[in-house]
Image 1 (cartoon, helix red, strand yellow):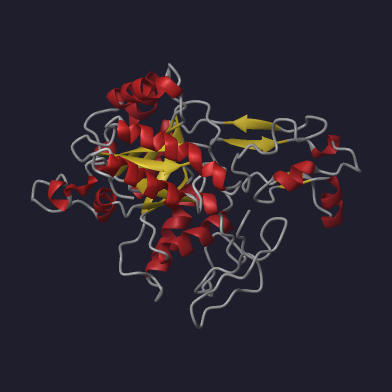
Image 2: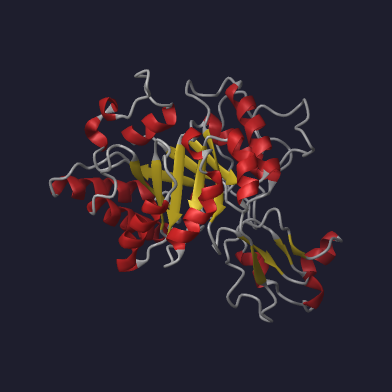
Length: 385
């Protein structure tokens, strides 16, 4: 919660400096309709800066090999810019949230991060979200502040089984006491919960704003004095993914690295096998399972349908959806990624890369720099960051 756009969440933050001639709008988000109105502003108004959306990537262990080592197509042409960014360590991925369906917020973030030069934007596997972000990226590409780089690669996220990234909080607000202090409101980082007092003041129904909730889980686990809040989990179907893959360039699969995960990943991707080779990137997001992490990860890799896309990104999900909690939230992902690189996970002929996610924030660059120094001191290539 360190840096926020004005009017976002429970408190207002400082105004973020903007280039000359660009100012904040009068409202937190512009009016939203089926399509952005013709008078859509050149810069989104009052953008909330969600630090845990920005993810840093570690290059492969052999990342210093340079562009000459990149796999080339039959014509000898270099691969797309996203793959070059993976190799040289300049890849920056913005994670919107696999369950984030807050369309105005997604649009604003996509617009600003496109202007900032992000390499990849990862969004929910939802047709409305994908189409909106595609149009937003086109608008951003035509903006005078857009950098002289290609637009971000668009990625959608799916899950192989129950996963914390694919859930929504829910509760029956009619069961809440009228005088409840609503601690659930205070812990929600995106103002997606409206308790009884606030609902009465706004003359609106209480409960969860489902599109805005992205499943962080902070309102679960005893926050509600009466235990009324629960989570509704869901699994994205292969049919939904297949309908969207032609409109994006990358796919991410979330797995919890259970014993059954290799088979679950294979089953989730099997119907998509004919579409996968056309993707620029296939990412696999996973948690730390201690001593079981590397064997299960190897089993998942062996279960991926062939032929593989030209790049595999292994996303070390240290502490999911917690980058705004504090500096300590960045440690688990950095430790997990360092262990993977030390085991040679990134040295697979230029195809595999290790990425940090889950808890990444302003402390992550320093952790990455320390990691690179330690790898260099041990005599191994430091990798890009």
